[in-house]
Image (cartoon, rainbow, N blue to C red):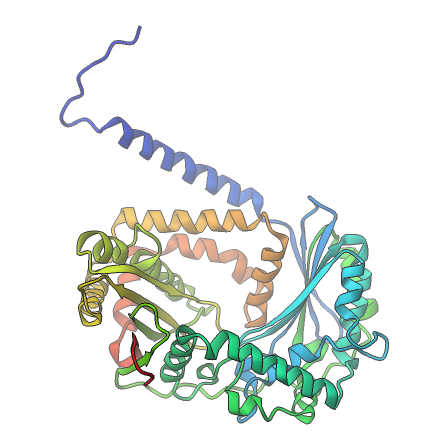
Length: 458
């Protein structure tokens, strides 16, 4: 029989001890797992300048093959917004070797899946398929890198497709339109202020000549990164890459230097009304630095600040606005360090019934000011670092996530060493680092605050 003893008033409750012990065990396990779980990564460069990354994961006979071009929507010439995304669509039409419209059908017939995506800084094409079909997809991707066949009929048809995509994803969504206006207001001179899909009036004029000019200038091995993740060896990938990508000629045309933001000296505000809005909210975006390998702690500190501020129910915003003051029904914050040029840290709040946008904005300001002044607590910093460690470990379960993780980093100019060193940078960030970064960069003069409201269209 176990004797029951009365607990001292100063003794910790049993559930507190259990939670603390569980957190310690979880932290130890995650640290141990992260040290073991990182897959082998091999890199090399072909003679024509194409970078290659091989991520070995032999748990299943599957491979993810990705080609990343170091060019995206932010590299488009003025006046042809949306051409990077438009070309992405046209790349699926065919080549002299692949019949028109057959690219994805061939992949599917071999049991695989394929797709593509366009971002501000890069464009990517990928296939996920059985590892014994790697040679097939590499041959096909190399073929369309230099030999895509695009006709006027393709352009007319696909232009209608991208305009309909803008209709459904942007023009029919007040949230998307509002976000588009926020970015346009935040970036006065940089192309990040132009939507990836393009401005509608320019999309309607995109031509075959525009597509071919963009393709012929940028789609070449020296502007590309090959990432292969899965059941492969570096030796096999090198042999296949040299066979299919190796003979392709470099273009010698890296993306042009981009216009940068001028010093921003005044806060900006926008107000947008739309009868389709279901819930009013306030949003603020600050112009802040991207990840810089020469000063990585800055972006790590900003990321940790945004996590403490607005990531999840344990964040400052959630606890204060939703649980304590009860003036908001939703809130959050996020920061993405992976950008070739300056990026943004964004925060938002959705008023509860009886509260106004002004009430929520004022409360957000007070929370940001307090967090910037005092920094997070040790408990908060430990919690968000633990979450980031867990996310890093869980990512090892997806070869496609690993391929995207490395591909996106290299496409914006980072190295494999930068990717692998990021966890150590995050772990090294102190409370004082976070305070310093917040006080320096969360400057109202470099911000845009927006109100989205239900009402007559503004």
